[in-house]
Picture 1 (tube, helix red, strand yellow):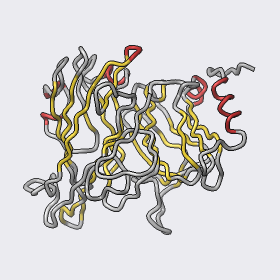
Picture 2 (tube, helix red, strand yellow; picture 1 turned 90 degrees about the vertical axis):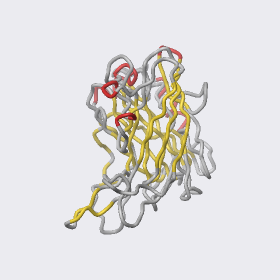
Picture 3 (cartoon, helix red, strand yellow; picture 1 turned 120 degrees about the horizontal axis):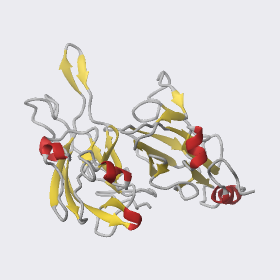
Picture 4 (cartoon, one colour; picture 1 turned 180 degrees about the horizontal axis):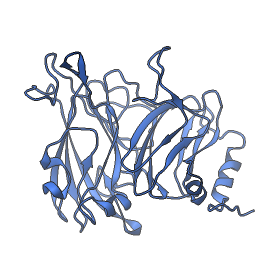
Length: 340
């Protein structure tokens, strides 16, 4: 299941994952919210004046889905697995009104941003939605700031995620297993925004709660800037591997200059609770085609933890051999044996 992109002030490009965008840095494309820090103090620091007052307010709906699954959506009847990409700019505050349309206790808990105990999303702090209840969760972000003695405190920018923390157990184990999760991206001023954006979640032995040959086929045209947001959930060790494309192992996945010594990788651990993101130029140096992405733990990929990154020709047409590759993927008997 997937959603579509929804922008706030401005947007461009075809993005496969629904996103939320706002702020004066818009006009670039990215789900988000934004604000700037004051010159003298850092938002979130003790006694700091906080951001410039920019607050983004959205409503999300937690809904039951077919097959006993659940999802988050931005409108009634639009819940997906994963949920919509929520995106902010450093310094911004995001207020989320969560409407629980289900008959189960659930919540929304973020990684990487600031929140009070009332917005923790955990039963420990009595922060959750009862069946049918509407509750507001408030997340804030901060820019980098100098803490003294030449040291700096980090900002909130990064590829994070959100998930349920209340269904089934006080840790939301059932909610996460059944699809209540999504990507949270915090941008820094000057970050490059993508043409297309995909969320890939390794959840137990599934990808976005699906297995091959039904795992997502992610599509882009040759030369487009594509952003991957990778998230790990469940109880198992995984690695994320993307064929024919590589990225820098840092915050953005891109080198900051010719002397940036960040390691260039095409495979990275993706364990429960971990998340990272990166951008690639689709087909750069390798051309269009059906490129695999998968868990590189061998018995995991054999069992169906594999999908396809389909890079079409620049005009959107299928490149030679791509349809045949897709047919092989869909016809493959995962579990270590082929049909033929």
